[in-house]
Image (cartoon, rainbow, N blue to C red; front, top):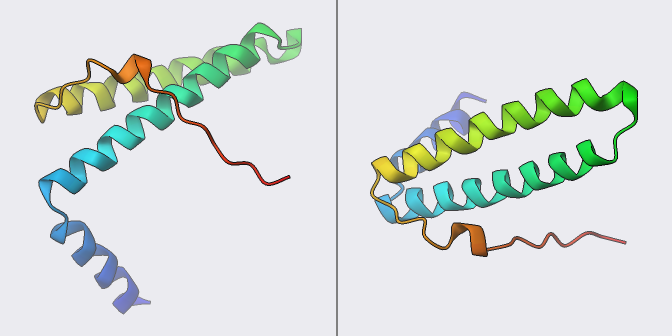
Length: 92
């Protein structure tokens, strides 16, 4: 168990700046998609679920803002982020 944790820590340390930047961009895109889905669900939510989706949207928005802030700190340009869309492959 400890050896597995050690390997995970080593992989994190060994990542290049480019790899970390790519992971950050992927996280931003996934979070953007989650936010879109939460907003969509809010629009069609039953009355009992309105509060749930309100809190979910607020939480995801905070995460998105944080990730964008980190990207700017790392001098990653996000000009096209709103034009990119992620498609998930769902097993049928």
